[in-house]
Amino acid sequence: MSQRRCRRTRYYVSQTVLKHGAGTCPVPRVPAAEIEAAVIEQIRGMLRAPEVVVASWRAAQPECEGLQEDEVREALAALDPLWAELFPAEQARIIQLLIERVDIGTNGLKLRFRDKGLAQMVAEVGIMNGKGQKAA
Image 1 (cartoon, rainbow, N blue to C red):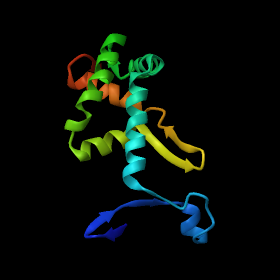
Image 2 (cartoon, rainbow, N blue to C red):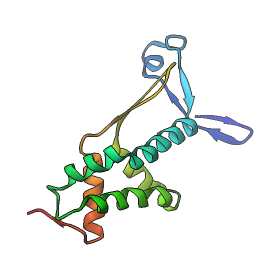
Image 3 (cartoon, rainbow, N blue to C red):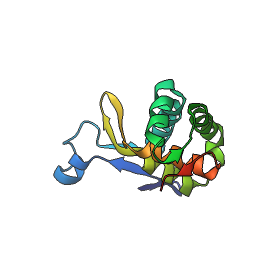
């Protein structure tokens, strides 16, 4: 974190730089706000992808008996416009649920998603809406 003109700026610093020092990595540090915005945009785009809806529905079926594909599509679509209204702690929880790792390189950003993260999120939404029942 640095402070400039009474304003704090957060940065993500490369593990290589932390272990081996400055100059050892082509991307030594990146402003946190830029990375976080890019990660959120990728998540939002992913939630709109038809193949993600189908995969999430299939993965969530064991957790939510009777859950329908259109219910999953609606739940994932509803998250996008509500994102800005969520408390930061809930946004962080969803991101941690979905994202395992973020790698930054000279050719861009690469996200590694958690295998069960989307299924768990869909199951939670289905249970909260009463659209499915947790399997015993």
